[in-house]
Image (cartoon, rainbow, N blue to C red; front, side, top):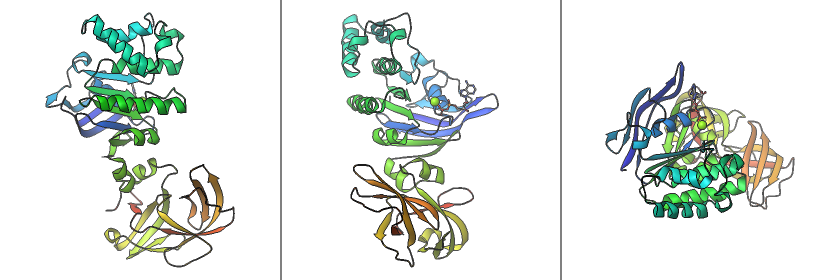
Length: 356
Ligand code: ADP
Ligand code: MG
């Protein structure tokens, strides 16, 4: 496996376009997260890569080879998804052995089952049948069954959605570790959870409305989102959005605060949305006013152990900022916010596209 390439890949179900001509390329060994809201086309994309779904248009390449017409078994791809159908007449042990039978000697199969049993804590489950497993247990078994083949492309479609939060963070670290031990394996991990994508991936594809919006490292997506959707989808608490107008070299926020417009946006009058992440502001107690300052008052101060998430009321509406754990602002306290001019991003109000 040298690389994976998608060229104009499209999936239509009747009149529904689930995937609208997506382009992507990754090198062997990358860990990619495919991140987007429910219904945006993630599973359809994965099923086409796996060969389980016909492609309505475009090309999928493994290395230099177009695989559009290769059946799943010849692609050396493993797919584990949310509700993977394990074979109900077989025990967990037999389910795990199934993808390897006829390909490897029995001693090697036993060795790999032992490995998976240890990694996913399957010991007590090996002789049970799928009907006697909980949702979370089934998910661990299907994950093990995908990985046991040592595939060149590992496709994981929301593989941890049935696990509780603590187990999820443990298993997700294990998935990353397994990926790192197999430098030739390309992993694509589907999730709607931005925290999971950020924790795991070398690069993230953000998908919405059947299209890939942006592909990049976490810091690229974080600092330079290509549009308002990407800006708003990553980050918890999310990016603050404020309506504003560019007037010459000034950026006038809805509440009247004037900031210097970024050089790239200066010029003709233009309606924009300003994106400000909760940590892209300097914060000062008191009711200072003047250029560059948004006057606000504390509405809620949530102490979260290692930080405070503070909701403020201001003339531009509610805003959130992140403060150190010792921030002691009380409801009603006056706070002066200074957005960091070299951090904020501007979006065209009509199209949502970032201004560069
Ligand atoms: P995601 O995995 O991001 O939630 P899907 O790829 O499952 O999204 O679905 C994308 C869109 O395609 C949705 O509108 C969904 O209803 C539709 N869709 C998915 N599978 C089928 C199918 N087999 N027949 C018809 N429509 C489908
Ligand atoms: Mg899905």
